[in-house]
Image (cartoon, rainbow, N blue to C red):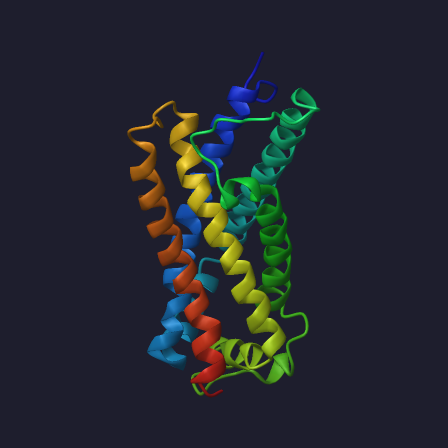
Amino acid sequence: MNMLTSSVGKKIMMAVTGVILVLFIIGHVIGNMTIFVGPDGINAYAVHLRDLGPLLWLVRLVMLSIFLFHVYLGVSLTLENKAARPVGYNQKTDLVTGFAAQTMWVSGLVLLAFVVYHVLHFTLHVGVDNVGGLIDAAGRFDVYTMVVQGFHKAINTIFYVVAMAFLFLHVSHGFQSFWQSLGLNNERTQPKFQIVGKLVSLVVAAGFVSIPVIAMLILKA
């Protein structure tokens, strides 16, 4: 039985892909927060990314593949668990439980929808007004104005904030599940992993949420 067919193998791969995705989103939120430096900050950051050329798209495709594989693993394990327990237990003991654990598949689907929206909006510029005219004084694509104008539309900001709430739930539980997949989570270590997981996910989610909220309430295009 190989890693792709065994439940244990899938759990390990899901943990590994989850770690890669968390590291990516931490780097992503740090880069996005250059918007608080001002137009020159985020526009220069965007130029540095574009200067990577084909490498940038290679990284994007690799991360998208890892994300879709992570989703596949999550769906596969959920279906396997339901098939193994067609009738729910009267009592179920689990080290990692609670609302975040019970809604992992929901938060995963919400995040999948958010990634599609995010790529369409900020990468492919679908629905962005006057894309051709978004050029700053230095002749660069004006990412700053695009982001601020986008988040001045309340529906975009609301969707972003809601998605980040689900990101908090997903990452906080995923952090604990990672250690459980490695066999390191027990009654003694679980509370510590739970606290650290919530802190990490809170910092990441808060960083992402700060961008649309501040862009909508304070920043001017």
